[in-house]
Image 1 (cartoon, rainbow, N blue to C red):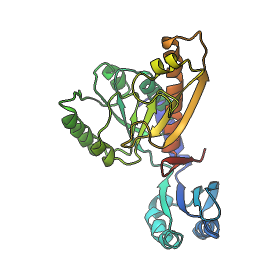
Image 2: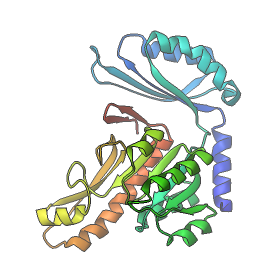
Image 3: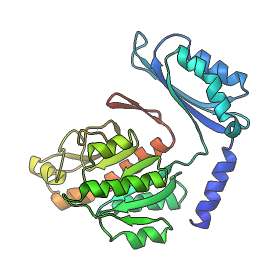
Length: 300
């Protein structure tokens, strides 16, 4: 870790040592916000950011994200969680409380294309990606030197049709060894098995080089070129058993025209891909995403 990053992280931890985040989803009904904010007030908390949304005030689902400062929250977290449980039960809440200073442990999977991984490394090195970059797993060797130059462990696990199950077992063992919180597929060109995905529900983020649901599967830029599209884009989403159909976190597009060939589309697409992936990952790391069915609520 660079000295600059160390200073950046240390400053962040010191500044936000008393900050926490509370995420809630529950059936919409009167009194939710009042109950939550009064609970925090009674424990000496000061709300610094609050976002809420309802799918329908009459029988819909209510979503709430609150950031608050509370003295000694790091040692009081379990106590506050226990005290909040009766309120959560009363409103049938699905909820979680997380510390602002908890840096999620992140694993990145990559194949041959390097642009998304490099963007993640640069953002992390600059202190802009607030995560514990724990390891990189690849089915190719060529990024080892680059990754290890950042002081990050690199694991080469080749994958073939015959060895896929064994390879995934090795990957799972590593992820559990490092106690990983989030897995980022930075153009990892292998389809994860349902058994792998089941081990990490809502913890795997993918970047798809297409503006989903268009051009699902392999060679999307070739598909787009043949179709004569005027917009190309990228989609970052959570991975589920349905290929490229998990809850979407972020998307973006760029205009193209008849003068752009397949290689032009790929070049433009790479810029969109890395931008969209980093944006989605940051929102996940900051607990700004709540999954609702096959959709997401993103409090930016």
